[in-house]
Image 1 (cartoon, rainbow, N blue to C red):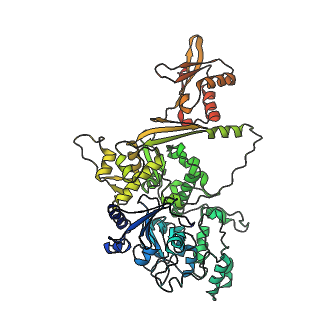
Image 2 (cartoon, rainbow, N blue to C red):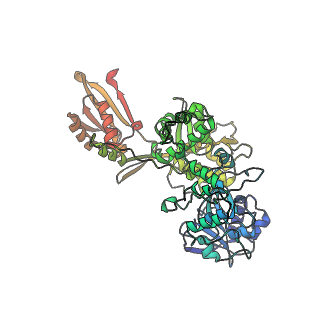
Image 3 (cartoon, rainbow, N blue to C red):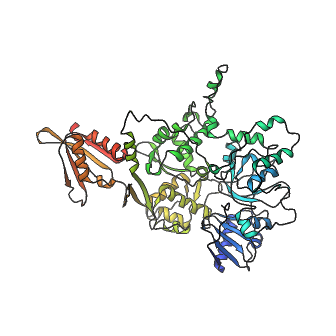
Length: 611
């Protein structure tokens, strides 16, 4: 967030109303804060200045003093106290305590906090939810050194074995915000004496390693070879897979490095003297299968599941996307998981807000509607890089052209806010004139729920409906005399919210883009008999996919060696029908899929000659 220095593009004073609003938002966001704490960091009679940065970050400061609060997106939904505010009120936020001061080198160097570096109290891991603001402290020092957002809930952390990323750091001691605005102020003499041994900006990785080794003279010699030195480069995105503190958390970090999805792969170096090892790797417990299912789903959502392919049947998601992401040599059976059924598993992920699904009552199948790509589980997951499969181009010289043609067409179902849901969008600062994908629209309503704190305390899967949300979901849809619902399940919220928006679709092919109201209409291909028992194939609706009927007719004439004609459909201006002599219904559909990249679900085929 503040790794690179930047100058504020504007500076202004807050009005009295804006100061009251900021105090109210801060009180709601900081769970441990009392009214007295808010008065300390935002004095009622002090002038508050707002600095707007190019990366859309808002920084609120006491005029003539230090910054106290910063807003990540400038919308008031993700605000955090600065280290200056935390030094004034150390208990403003709940805090993670590091296992040792050496871990702080990496925190104040810009790395995110991992679970192996956290000291767990005797009473166990504290309770927290994903997306909550927490601070970071070192042993023996009450002043926090960083602040960030939790990447998962405490329940999910325990399920993952306390491995992975715990806190996504947003601001830390000695970052660009501290350097540019706060100078070199520290709350008391000797602050961070146990935290900062050397300046992390000039200390090399080897120097930090040497300092760590010197602090533990009784360490066993073999420990130096347990974990390889981590690589820090531009591909790490500022996150360091640390091997420190070496004397405290080496075993935990070693386990963390092996807990990645790639760690579930069957080893390629199986000895011939251990034939039973391969069999053991195919037998997984229910908990291991649940963890593997989650990782495979996240891998698929990151790599192969695109918004343009939605909605998608659950069976297609499982067979074409989830199963191919399982590690080599691992058998993945949904029946051996704790969910037992694919539908129950998908509904459980919908309850967590990661995806949005609904049940098709006719096909008796769960359908994937949207993916929440800003969900903490999605954003914290790092997809595994897979090597592309080698394809023999000599077998099919046109394969590259076919793949390129498929990439030319992009069909996305989008939604525009209606009068029913406009208050929800305006409440979170979203543009009501903008088009949104299903996942973006679902994110809007969940942001509203988080802002208004509508999650039911006793049942986190249920959302309490306030007047605004209830009207957005049900006003005009409930029969007279019937009572309005007071709560809704999270898994039903996304689909219900989308049904209240205006459906549009966006089609793009090359530089041509068209946005039309309503659901996407498929291409219709029909074969029927004419006089003399001759067959004729009709194609209509090609203009929806930015195809020219005349050009298509000319192309089909050459491909099928038959006569073709084009006629305008009665009562539909600009819509044409292509007539092809002969029963080429199957070949024509295949040609549209392979040559023009038309998705199969948008082609309807009817052969009247088989009746």
